[in-house]
Length: 140
Image 1 (cartoon, rainbow, N blue to C red):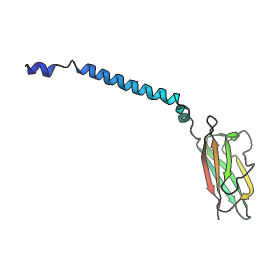
Image 2: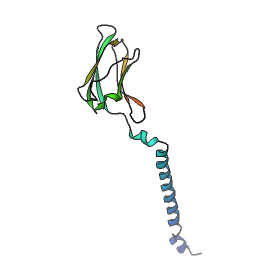
Image 3: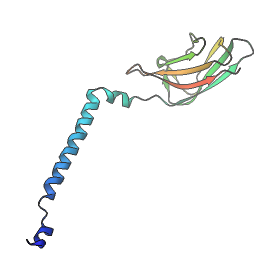
Image 4: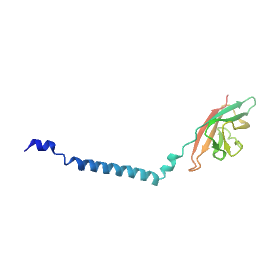
């Protein structure tokens, strides 16, 4: 047996690397196609908007009031935003206009109990899922 030929022989390396690359490409393609077939691709692309809200509570009367102001971040569509509370969900609390941009505010009067958490909730128009994008708790 000639050891020089054995050490310089590399014919089997190329087919092994080729098979590994083909298997890797097949696995990646299957994962990408499976993601979109199962509908997971749509959910990945739709994330909650980034927006900042301030909450100004006035609890001199019980139940009290709160003014919610969009401080900055993305402009939001009013139809996708709802405002809810823990103890009694505020009704009719909406932002005026079709869009909510920095500086827009809304007021909820006579519906906020001490210790109640108020949430600004965004509803995804594509899938109906919801995300809380801001929250604050009324003082005791």
